[in-house]
Length: 167
Image (tube, rainbow, N blue to C red; front, side):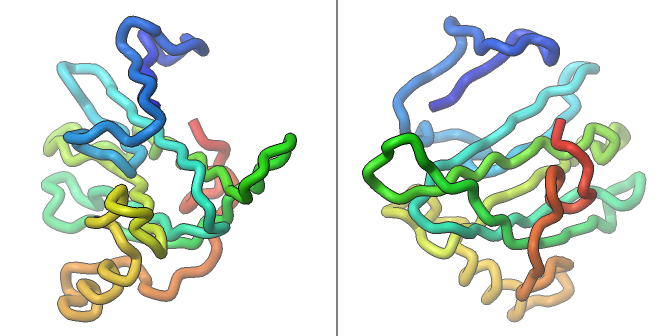
């Protein structure tokens, strides 16, 4: 399901611009990342959440560390999902990925900060380009292009890397 809000202060999705298929829409630019971007002089945010059968996923955060974005920060952590209850017959876990803080967005070079989900399974083809083992293999093959740990610790509460409440 994809929902959109008309303004940051609005708490109910705008039904006219929301989709409800239950699956990740095909062709989505960032189907498994929460991100913050600068668009037309204002901010645009995407927040993702998943219901998965496994209890953990890896999160990789990426954002610029200098004004020209020639160097970027990348961190990784393991997120534990919240178990489902309320009479659900299948086991499952909810992963609510917070939006990176707007201060991490580089306005001089519009490289958006993002928190990307890398599960341990592709779940069919939903995550075929974001499998954690593939990320680890790529990092080990070219460590100069990978600043994230390939054996990360637990994510912080709230924001996975900064420990603040998620936006």
